[in-house]
Image (cartoon, rainbow, N blue to C red; front, side, top):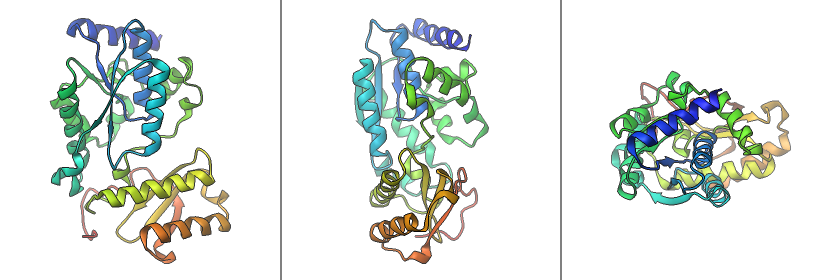
Length: 273
């Protein structure tokens, strides 16, 4: 029933605006499921998909979007939103995501007309999401929210429409979310974070991990596999790679269990300059 509710929501938006929408696809499970489902509804037309690239976007996310675009016949636009040139974003304040999304939606509007779809869902409304404020200002539509979809509903939909193992794809917010609030964002730092995470995923296939650059340390957090499954030999390999990438000592590299949003601090103090 929920699938048909989502179809009705999408068709209503398109009917009202009389134009095929552009789906903003980050490469995560929410947005790729929305783009895939929308392309199934409008199978006689190529749907517009915009994917932003930049230092904060993991390489694997971009590769995933490119492969899916070929498979589902999307009209894919790879765009550079240039948030990395926005001093408000670089300062990494608590509302950094607002400036990221503001740049994203402004850039998409330069290349397309009509509605912009985002993959936001009901669960996102329970978090602090300044990016949703930017979406509101840009009149972005959220079909999953309108159809009352939560993350679990999206994963089921992904499986039902043939996305297979991607339905279990771990959440992976942008790389800037790994940097503690108030520590300046730089392309070099984001590249290092991407490199260490990709290295760890070579050791543990499909790992769900976060490498957080914090005031006091590099905190490597494991969700899957669980921390207790990581051997000392594997930790040693990871430390060696981190030593080389970040030029830090073993004492500044820690391993811990995954904790959602742990690089975000509402009141910023004692941060690296």
